[in-house]
Length: 383
Image 1 (cartoon, rainbow, N blue to C red):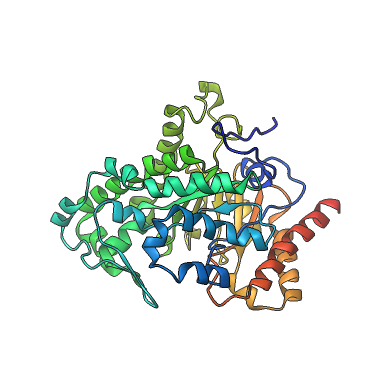
Image 2: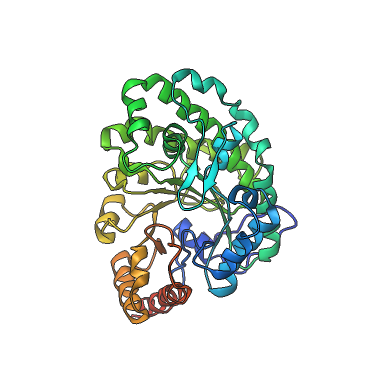
């Protein structure tokens, strides 16, 4: 069945749908590629644009977000754009103060310390209306992309957002957040439900605004072992996917399937593919593959052939070159990409890094990575 790209009226027609077709499991002429954090500090033009205002002020400016999203596409023939924003706009919309401290990262001056602190949070139903600036950025960017490539929207998964809200920032152990899981399981579930209730309309709103795919970042999956993950992360990851799909149908953005057509292998039924990226969550690959997402993102610690064996043929895989491989010579990058493509195989695959780009990376090497994926994946199909 040929995929038809779904678009609200008024957006330019999509010229390159390779990324979407790979996400749906259709055959593609080459392997599509994009990079997590492709709009980032490694680009001099990004640093120049960002110099004028603080981080979250930039996130609240649709024009700035649009410009930052488009910058990497002017340099590289990427197959998708991802909106410039941050996962922590959701805790902000729930009423928490978050600042970005240069050199340190995000900081919550008043993190959640006690169960009663949950009463400080706003009603999750109001979150989407607080985040209108993200929707405006998506609509503007979708217009400006002029159909060049699809636009990905995103959010942080409930457990990952909870870690920041309880820890008050980044942490190497997540011991305060995990302490909640062990000492306050009921309150933890209450917080994770609040976050899920906030995320669903936020992600549906991103599609309504023009996003053509969605990625959920469970960046801190690796801090949980299999038991905690299956209790406090996986149920909410599943819930987000299921409720977003239902929300898209209710909003008239996706057709309601007949009972016999519940499979999302048909793009007509799931026109907006969802990607789950659970960093270091390799212990839950099988469960993630069955969590309702069309694409499962892998970090670089997972062997592609083993991942493929474990998830089967019903999902597309995305990843997973070690970002630090981009410190290698351009020739070496080409060899590493060739190996990665061989390991993943030509179909049901989107090339990416196993994590985001780092600020000190050479843009030329990012370009070498993108070009190598396109070149070697075409050769792979010929042979």
